[in-house]
Image (cartoon, helix red, strand yellow):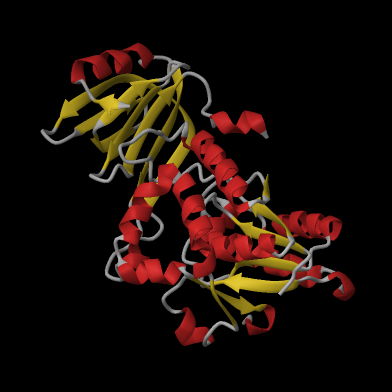
Length: 123
Length: 215
């Protein structure tokens, strides 16, 4: 992954618009947040392989990171805190936000084929 | 203690080293046969290496390779049970119990080590530990292995008392440390941990509750 270049990511988002795509969206502060700090509260959510079609999408710079919103026929897909991205060899747009220790805090990924982990094929 | 056949049941690559690395090294030195049944490939972990080298889609590939290396360092085999990180608690418990019991009946271990259900912090630890405990309970008495349970929760000692088995593994620290280092994608969380002297010392002692301490 590399630091987001807004114009480049916008082009990638535009390329998926109007097509049925699979989305992976998640945020987490880790399974051990309240173990290491009893005042902390574990928070996380993910949805994998949501099959949606967005009419348009936009990436917005916030100074420190980026927000992405995808407009669906009946709703929205939204992520905040994205910092890095790559288009992988399967042409999937992978975006993520990492903290200063490289830990993933948020991810938004868009693909025309369902997401499957690479390691799955070695079962 | 010489155990002939030992099966470790935890959900993530690196659980085997953190919780039982020293004990495994000790068992192997004494000629035991140890296999790690790893529930998932840790595909939903949030540590991506530091600097970041993995992403959500490639993490499981890295972690499988790390698991391969760690188990080579420890001198054991591993089996991936095929579950998904973070989802074990949502699978029907009975299906996992049957899966594990069937495998245990084939393997006939003398000892099973798993997480103490309810005291293992991560939901996958609790869920797989619960299934493993149930699987052992369902086995015929004459085939039933001994059960050691790894607890992580800060609440464990208060609720359960002291674990029956406390093993000083400092003699095997070099092996445990080398195995820990192979889990490179997770290394930053580790370095963080190891900067804390108390946490480091904790890793040189491995503690297990026994089956009769279950509640």
